[in-house]
Length: 263
Length: 317
Image (cartoon, rainbow over all chains, first blue to last red; front, side):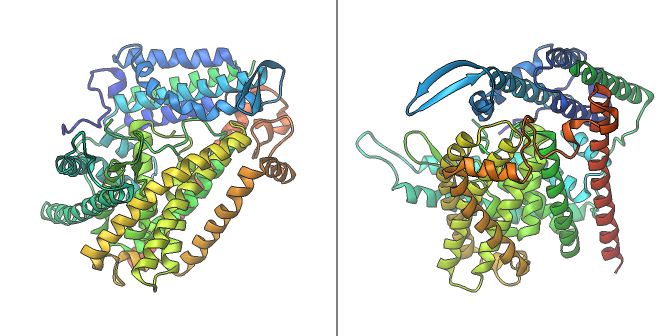
């Protein structure tokens, strides 16, 4: 498999790409929290948050609709909130009958449902943008600066580094199973569901052993290159005046959105 | 598709700030404990091991087996991680997996990550390791049965807690979400249980030393049995109650003050997100938000400092 199959970073030369990763992480989280704080039906505030997002898209040179396109994959999850359409007390808008139940959609329920979706959708796009303009190792480094415990950031860094390697291993296992599971029109391949589950479990066990042994080799290789419990980076993050300016600008904008959301 | 997301991840902003803050507090407290315990017991050798194990869980979630009609069984891995690596390390590994899924793939939100870690990493480890430890002196068959039940129940527990959190946030109807989520995950849980049992049985046969008395897996204390049994009982008792009598649960929640009358986001630290003496103004809400953020940040910072001091003290011994 290609090494960047999981990577979400898009190399471009933009102001947003060059911004300090700490600033980007903090702005993203602040925007998500700000969206969460907006009351239901704060349409003007939602609109401004959306405009802010589009502006960031443009600044990042990824194209104005970049995050929009990416965010559509996340939409099916919206079904979880579907039930608020009926459960929120309010004026009935429409009624329908399904199996043995009557459902009534209320105006308050509709308002709440749409607001939940918009808040979630705006926030998902901020998160998509963050990983599109920040290299993942830089992001992990930023998290370490933001006081996430080093043991966690190190595990995440390793996870990211070996994701590709172990996924390749899984594909080899799946291919091996596939190539030994010949079937014809007359005869089904393999045994019953339990047998198939057992094969899958053996594959997981096999993957565990291969990963375990690989971790030994990796540790020895790291020791031989001078690992002493710390990771070093070649680009130390330093806040420049532009970074402070961008952070201040974003905070001011979020403040305005919050005030707009209350009127 | 390369990667199939487990359907338990709560999407971005699907919880009210109060509920997600409460989950963050529980998660941060538990993880701080996990970090201090792990820092004490593990050498630097174990850090790459835990990183690779996190990648292993992530990759193992792609292993599936066809069931019927185009559906397939999957591994979710919470119980597997807790049994192989021990409870504390298992929690940290699952946390890293969930964090990466949220950060890189937007699978599960950043603001609700505390809840996602709680549901899929901490509860699963407690149930899985607790029940495994309960039968640690029994035969291999009993152990495998306990692991299978724990894996199934942990998926159900995740579904139950997820539904309750979304409902407490006022973002779903209890009468619909609990039965639907429990039904779907009772089936998904069977897939996870089968693969987990087969995988552990494979490891017991090929590398018994990794699960033996000297292994990391055997180092969890007896306290885990109590925690595991308590969480198990909670889930076993709460699930039927929540799906059979949602009105009863709603009434209990109202009586306990979790649900306000006109308010849809219950369990508020700061009522209506306003500061009392400033009244119902926009400024008041903004200030309330800032105060809330500072309080949560301060708690997290103090915990972080406590852990750091502890681990330094442990290091200097």
